[in-house]
Length: 162
Image 1 (cartoon, one colour):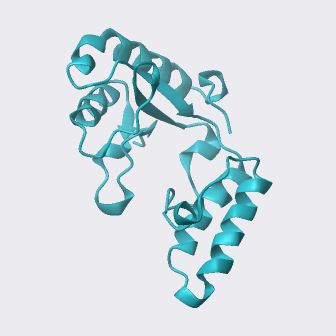
Image 2 (image 1 turned 60 degrees about the horizontal axis):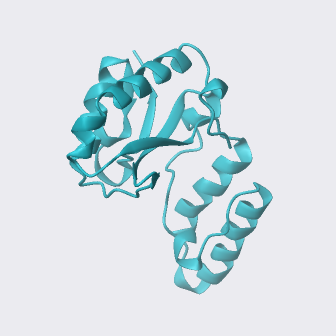
């Protein structure tokens, strides 16, 4: 798993740089919404990481009598992918709805707002997501904020498909 813009594929890499520059240029607008900046949390993703993330969706649908084993399975996949330790309760909360993530192609990134220089896990209702989506669209970037239902992913930005 990478956090580097350099690991993104062109032309998305150039669009991502321009988008981030535009976000920085709008810092004063975001300060009014509670954020003092942004952090790129993830860019290019390995297949092992995607499998670990996707396993949480599958574990969330396992019958109760198999839940303990499903949680162990998710945690094992996280260890195998070299990811961080997650709590049992997190192992059954989906974070990805696909095995075809654009992160695998270097055509997606996750960007989160910061508060006092640290990541801020802003809720889906944060007004800044809509503003970020507007800025992203100007750069040919699709924002996960615009997706509907459970699949809405406000921090996700990807190359727009034509």
